Length: 114
Ligand code: 5GP
Image 1 (cartoon, rainbow, N blue to C red):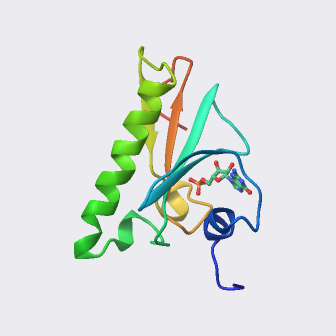
Image 2: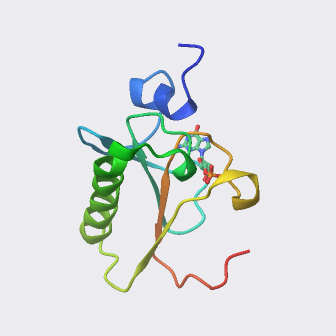
C-alpha cells in the first residue's frame, strides 16, 4: 500500500474524493483545487506514470479515458466547449506521477496556457 500512488489510494477509498464515474479501466474525480467551474480528473485504474510511459497495449486505456472525458463533458452541459489537458513531466507541470487527464470547462479558457 505504501507504494500506491495518490490516485490509487483515492480509487481504493483510502483518501476521500468526489467521484463522478467509475468504469472498468478508468474513473473520474473532482479536482481538489479546481481551476475552472468544471474541473475533473479522468484517471486510469492502472498506475501508468504519464503519457511518456505508455506500453503498446495501453491504447485501449487511453481511449477509455478520453471517452469518459467526452461523456462527462456532455453530461455536465459543457456544450460551449471544454479542454482536455495531460501534463507530462516537470516542465509540463505534472505533480502526480499517475497519468490523469484534466477536463476543464464552464468558462472561457485562454490560450496559450501559462
Ligand atoms: P498535475 O499537476 O499532476 O497535472 O495534476 C494533479 C492534480 O491533482 C492537481 O490539479 C491537483 O489539484 C490534484 N490533486 C492533488 N491532490 C489531490 C487530492 O488529494 N484529491 C483530489 N481530488 N485532487 C488532488
